[in-house]
Length: 75
Image (cartoon, rainbow, N blue to C red; front, side, top):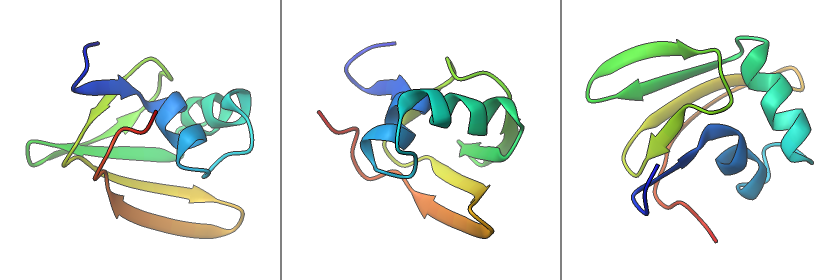
């Protein structure tokens, strides 16, 4: 991980898609998150996987399916 990437659980928490980092990690471990990186979509199964600016995310949470593009990593 470097300044151009961040763990997916941290990103979901910082972007307020999960109330806590633990809940974000559970969402990922449940297999509810798909990551599109360089045109390939994969199911994310580990909270330690990294996301980069420009990656696409598709996930189901709270009875909703959300699709988005990562535009920033946050602080």
